[in-house]
Length: 228
Image (cartoon, rainbow, N blue to C red; front, side, top):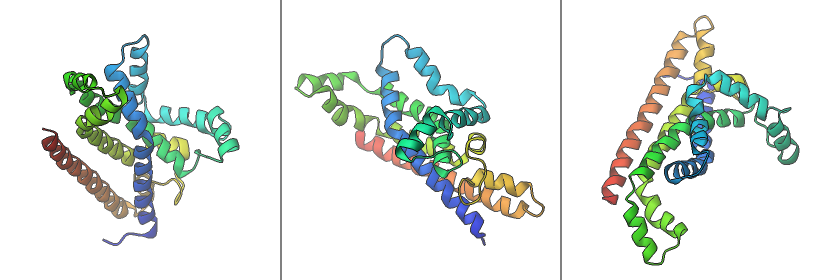
């Protein structure tokens, strides 16, 4: 299968965007999942709704909100650009941000379910032996939720790889800069004779997603056996 330089660039950019989307959002995903699973405070229902809101909103709406907030003239975007030289709008970093936002609810849900299944008696036993709450979390809780964390990472990665609506609204479809696999496929379907290249990219996209899901299942089972 002969790929054009533009197709190779779109594939590599998609992998880069998905990787950073997961890497940056993972600590926040673990913390949010823990709070939603263990938290008992007023307003937790609102937090829960906000976390899962991107799943119910049209992706274009999410992309527009990101553009308003993180654009060069947005309140957050202008602050980051002026003080830290970080720009999201119409950059690959913006595509990573859009992928992270869209994949975050799936990551949180998988990790939260793992937190819900942890035996609290084991944590209590570690506490009675003198371990601090933070040390209990690191040595007891976190290892037991590793399969859920892994599953959440893979789901978020696959979601970021396939994100289209929020990405094209927030960072447009700039070849070599923000053109990921989905936007490249969309572009090819709009030009005469682009069907063959679009089929190639579709096949590659499916192969990457399947490989990620299979790897996630295999690793999760191995981790589960070790924990058992």
